[in-house]
Image (cartoon, rainbow, N blue to C red):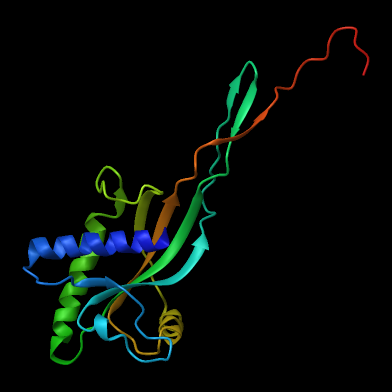
Length: 191
């Protein structure tokens, strides 16, 4: 599901770049910046790279699930949907003479996500059916937080933007159990 969310964001950016600039290949990829051994991933050169910086459960909003009450009892739905916050980094891996190009592509990506901060099944029908919607918000980092973030990811700062991606994952939506109604004791009955 997380892979689908990042792939969806990359696909949307690639479609936007194809509309604006004629490109023979995808400009945006989902990838690590470094191999496990520490070497650079060759396929990310001169690309915008989306990668995961962290995952947390979204507990900020109070979400409740309703129950359906009928004569035979109340039906209790299954577990609540999972609400996740993904920290997604969009980094431009251009260098040398192409550095100004990196800044242009990064600015275009920021502009696109600012104009389209929510992806759902109405505006992007190809969104994974397990995901209800994806909501993007830019996160501000202090210099110390930015240093820590890039230290974790290899120590070499790249022009980048950090998004908090709020991901609403659908639950199975099936009835798990039935709870009986609380009934009135019969008149004259002893406890």
